[in-house]
Image (cartoon, rainbow, N blue to C red; front, side):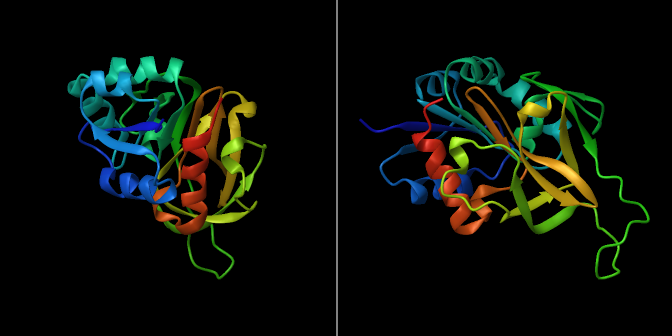
Length: 213
């Protein structure tokens, strides 16, 4: 029986790219972009994407009528958050003083890199845009077959700071180390974009399809 994956369409996110990457990663999966609570509840797995500003993402999720179904999914099935979708899982964001979904304790803060220089003498730019390494700070099934310190693609000005260090499973250095992947029970989320990260991103998506938390 095919595994069904619902990509939550609440008006914010790189939906088609995520869907195409999941289909390429695991052609046998039934991947759909969905915009109804019933479709989220019917799926075996859920992906919560997000791009832009967290205040807009939280507002759109609330207005879409899908928030309760996402919260229900977070308790009952594998859920993957991507980029702002990761940030939304936390309690609060400094971006617009925004309340998150509260699924993981912690907050979202902005890079503070004023005056810091990179190795080549240039200033750190915010947002971080481009490829950077992810150190696997803890083992996890979604890292299976993904080399430690592999390069993933980032576009962001804010990052999560979990209250519980055990929830950090990936770290990246940009001025200083920050959490770039988190996990707890049936939740996994990344600040980077797997769908823009070539083969290692596809491997992570394939691992999500087969993950049995």
